[in-house]
View 1 (cartoon, helix red, strand yellow):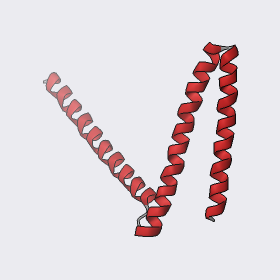
View 2 (cartoon, rainbow, N blue to C red; view 1 turned 135 degrees about the vertical axis):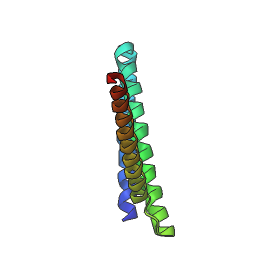
View 3 (tube, rainbow, N blue to C red; view 1 turned 180 degrees about the vertical axis):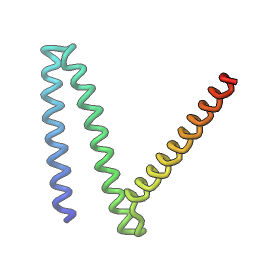
View 4 (cartoon, rainbow, N blue to C red; view 1 turned 90 degrees about the vertical axis):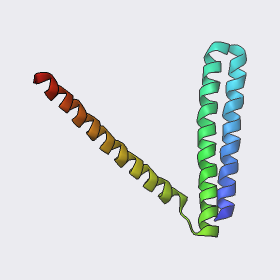
Length: 104
């Protein structure tokens, strides 16, 4: 299973290098247009690369320590999302109480 992942990641790296090189050559001809495209693609590639590294480290941690990082992150996200909804409800109620004071 690991061999397939190594080949896949290397193919992704080669593909990304080909696209970046094409954009750099285009930057010689049309600097303004390709400069923005290079920056946009580089940010997208960095985000994708970080996500792949996170998945690799997650598998290593799960294998060695039996902790699933992705499930842990999803639980934390759900807890934060629920807490922010509760705070928003409380602030809406306080706004309504302010309106009742105005009417009196």
